[in-house]
Length: 317
Length: 222
Image 1 (cartoon, rainbow over the protein chains, first blue to last red):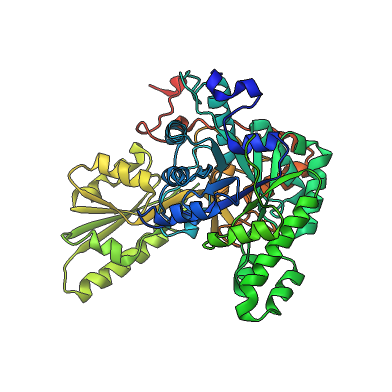
Image 2: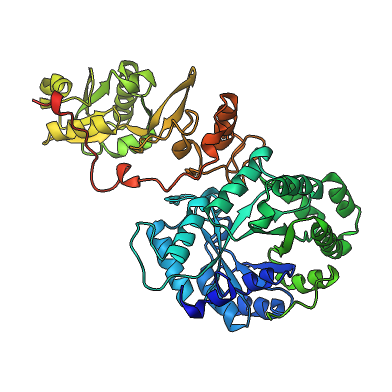
């Protein structure tokens, strides 16, 4: 490890997220969806709005298999606006050669966090006749990034001079099946080298608590920083739609509460529910942060963070 | 076996625009079993094409034959006298058969009547399902006899992904999640420890690219 990379502090990277976690802060991250266009304006606008409300911003990687401005380019725009980017990287569109190349490129641009994902299947997107790649899977991607960072080696075993020092994230979905295997899969991600976890959006707090109890039983919360995912629903319709998305679980009482709210008040209620969920998640032992996925509704994030009592955000000491 | 299905009539006839003498060649192996290119299907297609050409006032002579195996030069030879009489051969075998015919009958216009789809078998009468992706590096001993490469929509070796719900794949409720099947099977036979390990990236060089793969058995060569 080189000195400039913060080994004096015992940290693995220069990531702001890693620093805040190591200082015991409850971390807040949020998602920014890059546009279906070559314009950086929306990203810069959102990053500027969010930079004092969150500690890091995820840039999605062609989410739901719809072509968008690349996550790495979007991350550069986030940095220009003063934010800390977390690039998402899926295994759907790139093989091991392209993934490693982009990791080097991302690190060279100053990106310090990566979230390793399988990626949504192309049949959900706008290029359904595309061929998916899946040369490696998300767990193997985690392991590859770790090997590059900690051993300065490419997947093939060849050495590199300057390694990409990435704080490594992975996803976990406590609401997918088989439920009892979900914690095993988390353990596999931790064994592969994940430093932090961002979960699928939590609505079903009871199931999340059951999952976290299993996580704690295995001591995984001490090996990896778990950030609970939340997603503000803009309307009853949006919530109902999400109920049918594979891997999502939304309790009936939340649906009822949203349905019983007048339509014009539903966005406000969605924000309230989201802030309440954050407070509940914060109470769950072992959780070290939240990740807010305000899809197409990024501007609402500061209000949610404020309502959840998480402002102001700490500065890196 | 290799499972195939017939191309749409419109596409088949588009290959035959300049044809005046046609041989429709079936195959007695896989495509007979999956009812795509055996004797019966050859005769049905011959009758359909005959009617199609007559309706359009085209005179096309059609002959038919069924090889024992189109993937074997010895059996491809069986149709040589019929092949000599035509300008076009429409193969109702898999892609292997089409190519073996094209290699043997070089002066003929050899075209496919089928889409070769996968390595699989019948799960019930009339329904064939994919089972093998022919990746060249079998992992079934690690996954309870269920192939993640071809049965998981993302070919995950360390699945299931976050889209697995109620035993189904995120892609469709009609697709079983391969990793749920693997999990259930390994649990059933007390070998869950097999999927507690992280499987390393696969060697895809055994699967495709770098030209056609070859299997050579020295003791069988002459």
